[in-house]
Image (cartoon, rainbow, N blue to C red):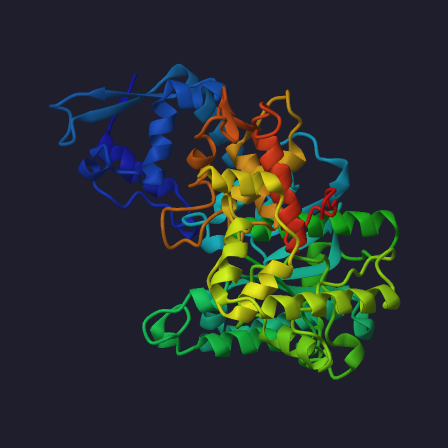
Length: 545
């Protein structure tokens, strides 16, 4: 058996790597021997030596030995019989090439949910900063959701959708608030839009432009400011207003916009788009004509004028592929929407008017007018009370007591919270607030887990909690600290009874006993509040809303 000194092994590995992969082992042998070294490249070598890591593939394939006199590192490596057999197969495969490069990563499941049909999402390998940053975290979330995907190099857009081998007419570009600021600074903002419009011309049947070109804007620019008030980097010289104004102009430039809280939220939106493409294919609502190679060839031949912003109003302000929840956005991010809404509201609207039902069975004009009269009488009575008395009433209902008199009255006009929440607050027991991450976790368990069955894993529960729309902040955190939406889970497992129980295998479920105060009862009350506040996106309002 031939032994390889560690130093020589590193040199040999680097000589066989494709330089374009940017994966060379650039550190010294002594640095790799440091137990705190987490270099992913050398980690792959150590996996080949590990019985646990390589057991599923028939490993281990190599053996590491200590030999002080053999080399300066005192480490040599030997290829085992299993490794020699595998290396022989890999070498023969490499010599029989070249092969069409395969995806860098794809959904590992052998079967796909029928809701995705024959649709596969292709994701650019530079997404999330590439493999060295958040790309694999994004892929992990796609795996959890079961979205059929592959990771490849894309020339246009960040996400495209295939139906079999043909390209669907949907192109999506994802930008964080920082990305928008950086793109505005270096000019990529307009160049990418021009490329997307040319691609739209090809996929959308020429001037008809029956192809959806979309931006997913991830995060809130107002939360990404650095010293000097600029977004991303000070040297980009892009203020919050600059970023938000650029985003607000996108619809007039032919793009639909979908806002997301975080990467976790973005993955949920992409899953919905893939399902929407599958539905449209099954119902014959979209035209699918070109393979990816044909698509790129035709885009190259398209004139530059096809990338100009649309002048026809028919191609401006398009609807996004799917409806997304934007309750998390701050006032600055929703300024354009707020202004449009304000212009449509008459001066006669009462300051304290209750929310009107938009459902087919909602109140008619007469009922609405009657409710306004009742409401005006309540306002008049409440205005006679002192601030101290208003705060007493709010405290009795477990509502916030701070703010101006008008704000206090507005809170008192809202429906009373479910009694179980008020009773818990009076007993000094923990009550998750709405909106919050803990409320989102409990409502997600209520909607997606059946008591008595196996609980949900942390990964699955985080995804489902994000989808509820009940957490104001992203469940995955904002990237600026170690805290995320899971940080309060321990609080849910405390108390007698606890609201959430952890089962064997790190799975979670709501407690069910005693019925009047267990986690299920509290979660149902939080679900009612979330619907009253217009936050929950489940589409099934509970009784009591």
